[in-house]
Image (cartoon, rainbow, N blue to C red; front, side, top):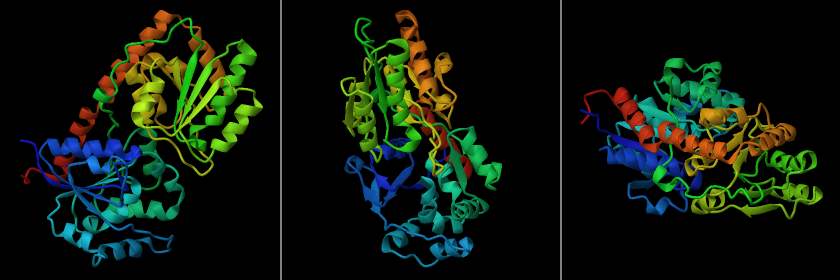
Length: 384
């Protein structure tokens, strides 16, 4: 008999594009019988569409401190808001925080011994761990029984190196709703110029400048004139536009800016491949397991990425020969050219294997089942 519990999910922006998948987990777990309440600081575009019980909770801001244990204890005392006080009176049986910073809101339940899950997704297992104060906050939570969920092995190792006991760490892969990313009917037309796509925030860890430079090398070294669609926005946009103009690629590269998820699918369909040369940013920020790699493969679009964080784990084994060691333009251009030299029949086989891989390993239903099982382990058989 499955354990059914009263669960509080904690979000930063409920329904934001980056958190939409996390909200989908909460909804699927509610469908499995759990009584779910969503606590959030603000609402994104899709937040209002959520039919789960919702409570807006005040933002908690903390400074670096010498005594983190005292700081965290201060968060567990008398509730600072009526919203938190009401939630504490709701007999919540499990708290699930999405993102490492959700430890702050979860602190009152952690201190009371309520089973707590903190799911980490990327920056919170890399850049955040560069700050000793956040490491101490994680340790404080782990010492009180919090379960940390990571996406891949390097995240697990990073936590262990920070002093988090291995028994406090679980690995559960992300998953996407495959009904929203159906296998594409059309493959690239062999008579059309190759078309690559980059999707992501224009930030250092995504290395969009490497993609642009690789496009120039693809022409200069191999005589291949390809098209590139860049989907996303961010602080590197102006520098990227200047780079494109300086390299004379304005007619080959189209910048779409930030677009809705359905528009992402439209741009991806029929592309030769998705390019994502992720790297560790100067501030320590790293990827988790980029969802766009799952979405592209689900549509039947092969991917070329780097051996960084969990990127390669997401790639179907048949496509891993195109994964490059590091984010440099030469390596990326070589891999792009090697891919274009593959026959149309082989490219189609790669597309099919990518879809099959995502269906098998990164299906959101599988993720929800694993979280459901974790809930049962943490709560025990006594809950109904």
